[in-house]
Image: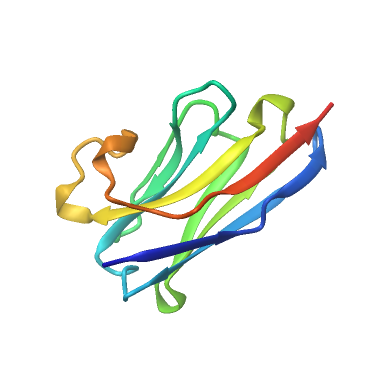
Length: 125
């Protein structure tokens, strides 16, 4: 069993930055692929960025050049640095984890079993 706890959301103006954190309990960091997904009002949950246990990164087009995903396996913590935020980045951001060997399509939300409770990010214009 894996428990994921996100933090770091908030409200910023367009162009601002936020850093999200996700602590994974039950020693999930070293053998799990982990990622960030988001869900805006009336939208499906979509991928933002994923990093597997050996550091391979995958970004959604919307995140490329603006967001950086990283992980600290010693701290079992996943991060998402978000820069140049736009109003259309407004969403609830979720941390997800899955055993690395089970993930074939890392940007698909249905590949992941474990989810955090979500943290709200609001970007105003």
